[in-house]
Amino acid sequence: ALVTSTEMFRKAYEGGYAIGAFNVNNMEIVQGITEAAAELKSPVILQASAGARKYANSIYLVKLVEAAVELHPEIPIVLHLDHGADFATCKDCIDGGFTSVMIDYSGHSFEENIAETKKVVEYAHAHGVVVEAELGTLAGVEDDVRVEEGMSSYTRPEEVEEFVSRTGCDSLAIAIGTSHGAYKFKPGTKPQLRLDILEEVKKRLPGFPIVLHGASSVPQEYVKIINANGGQLKDAIGVPEDQLREAARSAVCKINIDSDLRLGMTAGIRQHFNEHPDHFDPRQYLGDGRANVKAIVAHKITEVLGSNNRI
Ligand code: G3H
Ligand code: 13P
Ligand code: NA
Ligand code: ZN
Image 1 (cartoon, rainbow, N blue to C red):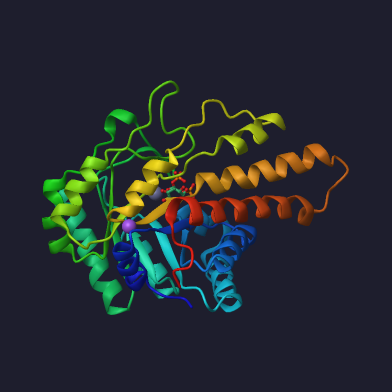
Image 2: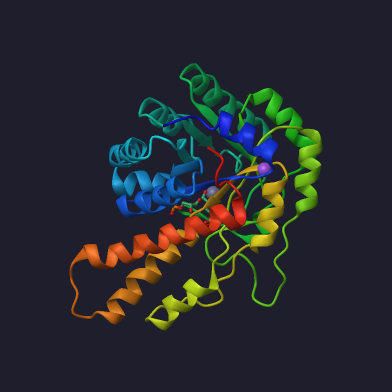
């Protein structure tokens, strides 16, 4: 069924696991994710960015997700707006059938972030929709905005109680060293999340669901397939899975994954073209991309999130 994340997060928090929030841009991605979730009896969040809504048209994405809900009525599915830039974008999604929205005012001042988030919360809650907000800024590429490493900043735990109580948001994304995209850490350095900040936040907000963005692991087997089939991804590095597992066991209830699905889709298509230069039926190569998306999501659910058999 199409639901909000309220029950999902409550159970995930208590059970010491997290729900995967996977970015969707087309039919094959929606199918790959939801087939894996259904087979593993896992709740799942499908999220659409501004770029996705522009690429596919928001109505197509809503209808694709509604189709998945109809095909898999037994699994709880959330349709979430990823990185809503302002109240207007959030309102458009709330009015258009989304059950959850993110207002990302993390690049603005603390007071502006509170004001805009509060405005979204009031409208969303009046319409039965839940709201994710963000404190702290991630390094990397967020839509068209490139956040330089020096400009990113960890969430300040001493701010979270005031932010949550004044805004009334339902979940909070924090910055603890993850970043968007496939190049998260400098080659040769040891990727290390600030799980101490997470614990500090958890202490101040007991029971409150925390969100991790930029949580792709950039599986090297897929990077290798891409590079062995004409791709050129140099020094692509992601978040180690054991650190994500640790976060999932703690207050983190939602883990965002987009880049890994892009890598899987691209690896499947590149390999297909290389092995079958005579093929020109999109169902053949998109089918291989979809199969990789499904395999990646199944791996996340069972090995990283721990959300299998939780419906
Ligand atoms: O937050 C970033 C997500 O990976 C979405 O990326 O804005 O290119 O769709 P996008
Ligand atoms: P990745 O780029 O690590 O997959 O992060 C996705 C994300 O945070 C979407 O909001
Ligand atoms: Na958790
Ligand atoms: Zn994000």
